[in-house]
Amino acid sequence: MRHRRIPGTPVTLGALGFGASPIGNLYRVTQADEAAAALDAAWESGIRYFDTAPHYGLGLSERRLGACLRHRPRHEYTVSSKVGRLLVPNEHPDGVDSEGFVVRDDLRREWDFSRDGILRSIEATLERTGLDRLDIVYLHDPDDHWRQAADEAMPALADLRDQGVIGAIGAGMNQSAMLARFLRETAADVVMLAGRYTLLDQSGLDDVLPAAEEHGKSVVAVGVFNSGLLSRNRPAEGMKYDYQDAPTALVARAQRIAEVCEAHGTTLPAAAIAFPHTHPHIINVTLGMRNRDQVLRNVELSGRHAPGELWDDLRAQGLVRADVPAGTVH
Image: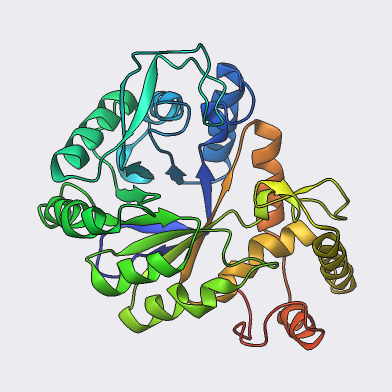
């Protein structure tokens, strides 16, 4: 699997990454052996970038990821986690987490983008994973915390990066406008862009991708299936788009894109994975993976060829924006 370096840092990423939110019991229980099998399959398939966060299962994702990786050669893989949500004791547990993860709620999340909060969060992540360092640290969903995130959190991360404690720093969000500000106005090296540069939504072209190009920085694309609508060869009513039921018109558009993909000898999910790589500053696509079968399917899909003529055809039919970069996958 080819690797590309985040400019100005020692960190390199392969084309495909392992998103570890599902092994934190996102939406439903993932058994421990199922999670371990998924991580082993990823490793055997050549995946070497793994992304997690304290938010994912109130630390469960970090613990499971660390258990798999800590005995493997540390120089062979890259791990990112996130800061901004401290895990603290829950004084009033109800029994099950209320933020989408099927885990006990003995802990709760507490927003904290202060310097002290950042340092405490990283220390706790290292304890949960059992790793000696993190390669990338992202600010996690700082939408409502711009000032503290920009003025306290990013300088704290920059200090750790400059000391060689962290390899690269950035932010991860579901919106693109603030990510552009992080690239333009802070010391961020890389941002994680969720769902805003896909076959159905190219709004990242309005702000964050031009910012990456202007400043020579990198973007990791996640959410490329837009919550599921692009994950099957033939989209259908009832599938999700950005965490909600997809509107009928959007399902119809996804079906038209699928037909064009088939005409060019590929499938909708394979094209959905390939599409972000057509932009020169998107260096990785990370997909959430729950079990061995999902890993093997995603690896197979990511290895399929997507001809440049496919993107030309989608532009010509108005199915993607006219300013989507032309050419082949980088």
